[in-house]
Length: 174
Figure 1: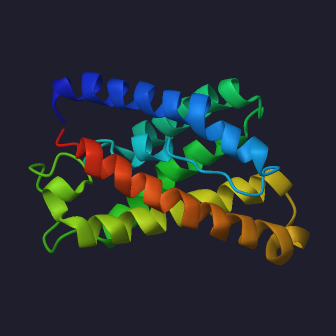
Figure 2 (figure 1 turned 60 degrees about the vertical axis):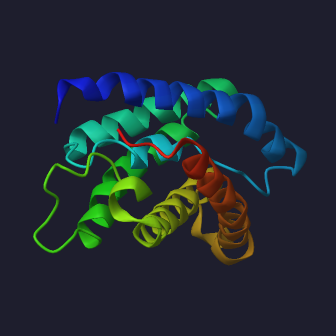
């Protein structure tokens, strides 16, 4: 991992936090929390490929805490961000090229792997993120089929087009 990874990732985090906190959190409030468009997990997904799992978990936790400060959710996003930092490694391992990652692929973006790979990885990543998010929001399996799953599905359907648009607009290369 190069020492020049900090500034692009810090800039990405701040931009995604601004979008999440200033624009997209209003959508969640206007739909009574039933649909939540979450783009800050892109920060976690777009960390350098070879980022060690503990660093990804800490980065996800910090990003989640910052979103919690914006939204007043007291640890909900922190828990989800930390979990996503861990799940990221499992998902990336599952979709690793034959022979593994070489380090030439700096981040998990279409610039390095193509759109089909990116859409597969990001779809699973965001589905896992949203399922954990709503599971922690309700914190009981009793609501899994009547609240958690429908809200996660609606939020996933609402989030993925925004993710694709953001990646297409900014097409991160490092």
